[in-house]
Image (tube, rainbow, N blue to C red; front, side, top):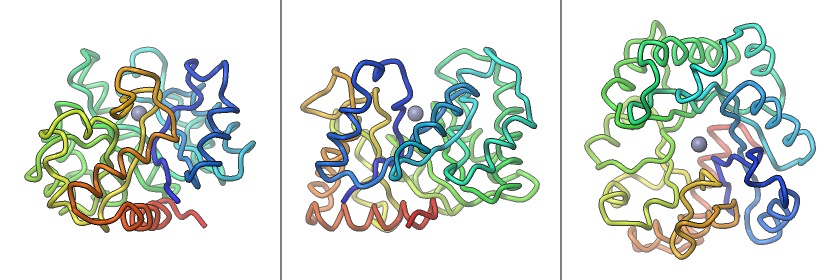
Length: 251
Ligand SMILES: [Zn+2]
């Protein structure tokens, strides 16, 4: 069994066949899915999806690329964060690839860390072209926050090591099948510190690169890790599933 620890099944790309996509995953080796909302509406939708499916869980966030599109309503977010099927706060962090206001990104990142502390749930971190800034915040937040995952990791091991040292897990997605650089940390990151995800509808792994991604394809990510680490697919599946269950408190 695999756990897709980062999907966006609430996105419009799945409006036509959401139920079939979910069924296909659950009938073919995906045991659980963490669905990540990236704005208030999307986070509410994510919770609705999690209420409908026993093995779907929700994460809630105002993504750094969405911070200028809505006002951050602390009370509303805190209320969602307390929901029993919400297992993480995020994805939050920095995105310097997109041009939204960096100070504002920092402000929202800190707000969401505060909420994660209040509800005692782990963080899902989005860090794009911003690792040092992300590390600074995680290191220097008033109570250093050390429970969570760096999602969509495609940097080298020196960067991975800094996040591992803080206590974070590393999660890999389909882009590790695109080229060697994206996968360069995998041989050194310990299996008990990693998870797998799709980030669907984005980043479909080879052989579906360029097409819509879906939770079923998380197996190609696990396969690539097995190949690089020269271990069995089953071992990768078992370990990454264990890691995800532990981090998100799943049964
Ligand atoms: Zn995402």
